[in-house]
Image (cartoon, rainbow, N blue to C red; front, side, top):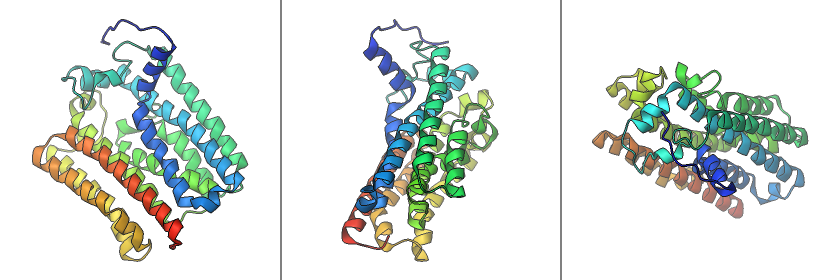
Length: 322
């Protein structure tokens, strides 16, 4: 049952509830995808009014899509009881505070959240349709990625509930990566290997946060039939799975660098991230505690974005091959 808190009144309080509903800190993290795209394009491309307009339309629509994804995930979590199990039946901690769930605390109703989520999805679809209309690059693969992004990202735990059927990890990896790939494609009609790598690093960054979060949520997810990898696999199998994801994340850089598909400067730039990602998994193996590993995953995600942005800016300034 939700925690009954005295309802605060006022516009600021209401905005605060919806901000927590959409996990505004994670929305800000996802918006970093557009920073990656902008620095990959470089100053010359950004000086083009059409390119800049496409990116602005995409980011406005992205706010709605992300709001819908986060909101409808919480609606499902309340309805099936998984959030109750994962947040209310365990100690409230700074790493997973219950206050980030205003549906659980009774500050918002399911009807309010659902209306907000549907509105966000419609908002995102309209603005992305405008971005496609303005873009001169309507290659089939660009349109396919953009349409799949808006249709599958929200299905993670709502609608088709892909994460309940063993497809959550693949859905999250694709969706997070596509937040880099789709706007770059709409702006240029191209997908260089380096941009694909940067998109996958962005996607793995979110996937590795979710992997450890799902490990912490095994009891609640199992109780409601949510078939994440952490639920389906044994404890040892999940450790192996997280190790394989860690290795795959590193190979996203190391494999193309080894065959010369991406420039040397990018591989060198993300070395701090690779060290942090390795330390994250090693720490989890040592302690078995998924929440600190999840926090390290958030740090690793932000570090790889920072490394990517700095590398892109430096490369364009120095005239290095992109």
